[in-house]
Image (cartoon, rainbow, N blue to C red; front, side, top):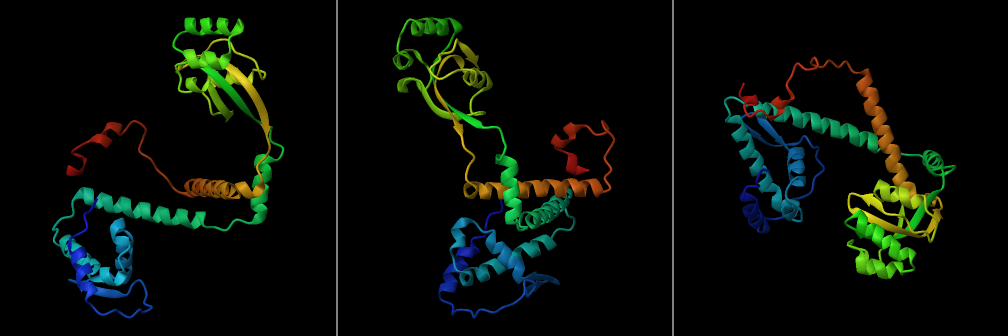
Length: 281
């Protein structure tokens, strides 16, 4: 990351003694300096200020003005001093332009207004008529081996209290709390654990279930059906979904309409991405 020259702080001190500048409405392309024929504009200075580190953002613009201008003058003469622009620098400039333009296009798409009708249609598509979602409340006892799990199951079948056994035997973080995991929805647990829970009835204790964490004995305490969320509580999420779909559709449309040619498969070694001499040629 480029370091900010120390003259910014010097400018801060000097500007404290300077008389205030009058505010004027001027365009972004207003030229504030010219260096060997290259213009430096007010817009370039404003963007430079926005990109300063956080510790500078609270400093008044009139304090930073001279320091930013001096920074841009120095950068301009440094750039002009290059007799030949290095290849890697040329590529960086190309990538920066591409990324900036793509970002502007994305911003334009994502800022398009969304009608109430579109929001309600998205809500209906996502929540109305969908299969009821269930939440589960379970406890478990986690041990290292199948043999240990089978021994725990026999103890429970003989009438041992599940919570007390979890506090004594479980190696999982929920053990001290009697193995309680609280409420969770589908997709929140690893698949073997979830498969076992979704096939159980409240009060039932499972046979040993293996996951990557070890062997579990699971007790399903309860389950409940989740109602669809209120429209107002998910409207922002729905807006994000709509904008994401619009962006994906726009990108797909643009790519489909573009004339794109690619290098023949296998003609370029992917390991060239790691080449240390790529930009030497």
